Image (cartoon, rainbow, N blue to C red):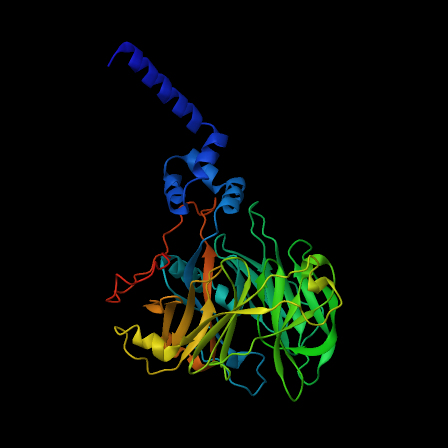
Length: 439
């Protein structure tokens, strides 16, 4: 190598070093890499760790790339203990109030933190999760929010109003500035009669207090008690019913961001093979739309709620019914599903839809007895979810099983994000298998 070539190489190395020591240039390089490569680069140096874990880089990265989630496990909520009377069924001591079936090492850590620190008694029962945070409590007056990453427990002050029957909503914002912002909403449920108003209380982590509102609708309805709302882009979707004789299953839509106190109703779609449905779930599709699924003994059907055509949202108008329409997406016969998965033993228990995955339209969780399965909708292929926990103690027919996801991003308090991967069993049809999520 000539002297001139050596000089050019030395200058090039100097330019590369200068570029990589500039935070702005390093940011632009890292923003172009997939998530799994970015996570590995936190081990390069303390400086790279600081850049990747910074709130500004995380915010810019999620603007360019879709947020991924890791499955940590499944919380089990026994419906028999909700607001039980004094002479009602008591939870046996062998059954924990806060039960997590873990699906990975991270989930094991969360479960151990719950058990070892005595948080279970303070938290009470699981209610909902949002952005990794846990909302727990004992209806109708005791609630708390726990952050499994920082292991900080925040006890909410006692609500001002007593609701004998209620439903909940939990809204947690992305905390790019490492400051948690969340809201907890309690809504009163009038079960004996239909009304066109709903009393709610909202707790804000910003003010630290509960605030009462009265929501109105131009037609009568009633919210379903002991249910938890689905929240998409800040909009709250509660289950509701209309009518006394011909009961119509609906959604009650409330947008706390626009500053109004109106509720808009949206009738749920009617199925063909799932008319006599026993399970129904809401979730967010890959393109940020609301998706609804219901299942019966025969099969499962899924719809997606179309975007509003008008520039003015129906929530801000005086309309009682939303003008948005359901678009049919998918219909599945469980009998056909088992035929496409011959390596699985025919389940002795009935199959039911369990939950959608966050911001995902390709997969759905289903349950058959104690088995939790991941279904790839297009190919109808199945994978078993391996979980750890006392499943034999669970009263499955009376329990709500809720998947617990955490956004997959290393933070300053947890720099080394553990790879939450599941050991998928071989299905015997590897060539036809879809690209399963790598949790």
